[in-house]
Image (cartoon, rainbow, N blue to C red):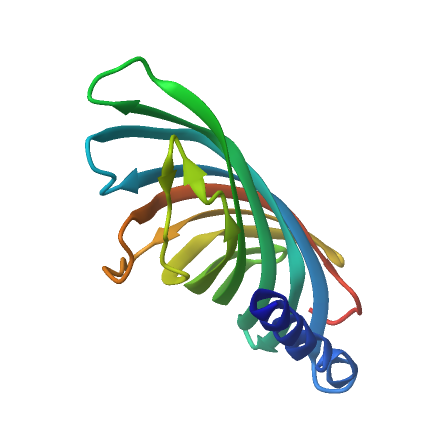
Length: 199
């Protein structure tokens, strides 16, 4: 229930600026993409874990605030990841299990328009883990709920439609939980659509 409240608050925060965007050069929009992730589960005693080939989709809302050649873009995204985790205890034959992860992400990007229709953008991203696979090979997982990450990449725009390619990851890791889920890198491709004209 708490995760749903957090998601509703984040999306509501973006939606409340839609009307503002019509008069203040602030453009609201929708975003969707696909991600390819490098992830690791650590600190599971006597267990070797291979968590590769975890792919996902994301969708959400954003605001694009123009300031000359720069723009400021806060976003609220729901990210859904799915893959296979292979575990081996004491060198035994590996066992495969499905792994699912749902997060709420709030990147805050700063972009620089280099050429008409072409920009670079980067910024921090707060990540909140809403749900995940709780048990793997008999081990009950207890993972950190939040972490700070980053995104950086390129964006091209064609009228109100945009496409982007981002590289990102997690830059902090808490020791509060018994086990750690590390997300050192990922590649994200996606598209954006401005709900009103302006940028």
